[in-house]
Length: 188
Image (cartoon, rainbow, N blue to C red; front, side):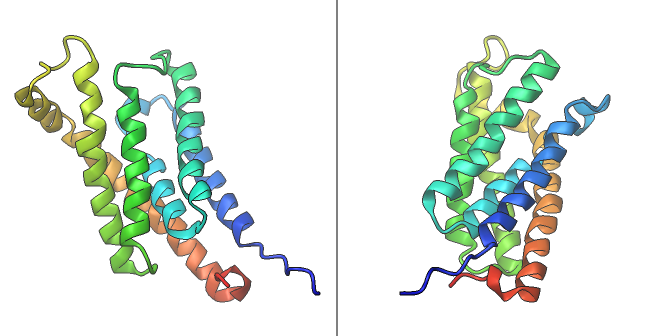
């Protein structure tokens, strides 16, 4: 019986996620953080993880772990605190984004990744902004208040779209180039 051959695919996927994650964490110490808030790599990480990790545990836990660690760091740096009202809606949105990736990006292609990005950003916008309804005095806890929140969130979601598209292009593009050059990165 032969020993299983080492496949560095998971290590390369983790390295790409770690590199992009460091960019999110270092952005929090930028003096212009308010202007770049939501120009984030976490949406791209959720899509990337959902598309490339076949094990559900890895596909869902790694993007959520990156989100949690970076949120804790940003909360510490910014002083806003982590457990804001309705914070769990943001995490639910990211779970759904990984699920979107697993459903939409079954085979990595430019069209599939663009479709995944647009769908995931839409899911993020609709689900994560429910959390604003839990912040006292921010919006009335009504459907009209939710619509006000969605309207006010458009500039943030546009930055989230740009961040997800740019970081996603880098992540998917880098891995696909590496996969073509090193066939060991392909799934068995």
